[in-house]
Image (cartoon, rainbow, N blue to C red; front, top):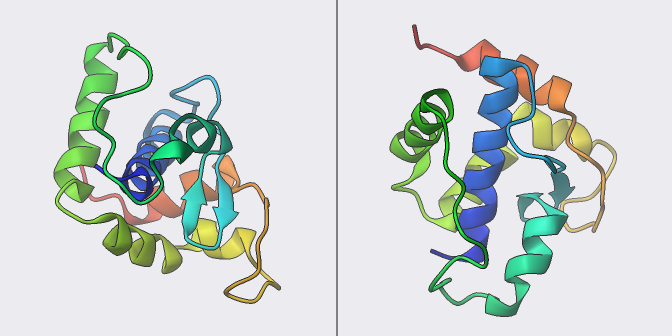
Length: 131
């Protein structure tokens, strides 16, 4: 998958973690409202060398996840996994967390404004339709 798609899927996992568990699901869950949607600066540093090319293999070994986390990640994949990085970018641009972090900016303005976990929680809970 591309770096853009990895960024957006990671964002959705973190955002839904805040919505459903009210806690971070990873140690560094900071996402910033970049021009092309939510970006984790940490992930960006790890995968930036791939540019627009597909990422062939992860930089680090995958962690073992408990059942709750596995269910969350599988749900994120089932919901968003069939979309391209560009489709996910367009989707995040319609959603309140990214938009709120970019208030007052022009569409092409670079920024490092953090997307608030509280805004993520409120927004994704408002659209949650699960059990």
